[in-house]
Length: 250
Length: 252
Image (cartoon, chains in turn yellow, red):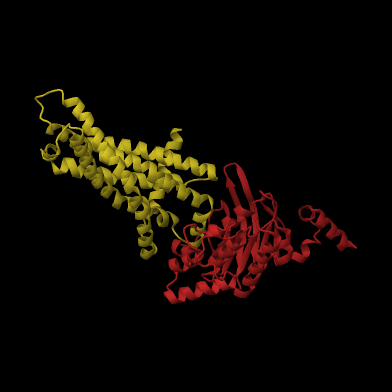
């Protein structure tokens, strides 16, 4: 098992050296990139919107439940604590984990199907660097669009929290806005989240692509690769989250 | 011309090719036949450069594949067309886009020239009117024709076909066989076809190689197959009732 793990790391590294090569035709690269941004980015907006709004609402309710017993704590502190949770952890990490499921399985199954139906062999026979041609646009699309989704998620999470607080009578909307603005540090609250979003985007794209690209066999193996892509991406995100938090915040 | 010299290839403990020596001739349909598991597909993929042999060399017009530079090898691949067993068409592209893909990738043609070339090869393989359809919307026979059209779109010098008529009805299989032979002669290509369809062997086998357990055990023409005295070839060719009757008729 340990040997397999290290062999897998080696194969992943070799694949990445093939992926990050100059595209043969920039025009075709940008065409693929546009397609991938649509498929992996724009098509994920719906789930990010729903997830973020409800996540913000739940965090506000839970924070209010913890803090509202003490009359000495001003209610805008509930909003401030909500902001910290959403910007530092929930938006970048939870949204990336959800995207690892949605986007990761999509990438692995599409590449796996191309592998077992010999479409990747067809590209290789033509003299095309199939790894770069197929994977690079996916990774770049995620690197470009994941931070945009995370920024969107931050705003929607905070909006959802403020709306829930106001509608349930926990924190008035104006006080939520006041709490969100209180002691807001751009680096800690925004840039940190974006750094994480970018690293997680690379993990989702590259790990899922590796799982799909290296499939051997048929339909069953494509299904296994799809599951592996999600599990490996999630584990890698959790590990990277720990390392990044330690490196950046301490 | 392509020459394979003493090709050995293994996968772990399993030695698939055990020293194959074959010459494939230009302007001829070279057929590799043999039972499933005889090493045909591995041999074809080794000639293509998808597998590296452990021993032996492949020569494309006396140029050694193993020592070619990366750039030269890339250029060589543009001179190769390949028809895969399942077609290997790109699902996300229409028929016309599939055929156009190699031109977009490697040629410096203008858009007009590309359009003209796509139209020419589509007409050549009798695919008129199918441009906008997707691979999932066309029949198996049409998929094979699209695959052939894509393979010849760059006017290759070498054409490789892996079981080109597997899964096709006998009539369509003959059409595909004839198409492969016609374009081989028309464009003077070196064509290598992997098959175990005896109809193909008799129909288009200008040069036939019989493989067994990773070795070439016989070679000749389609006319010579039926009269071969090689025990392995006889056993393979005259397995079916039909061919047994053909043999009896020939002996009379």
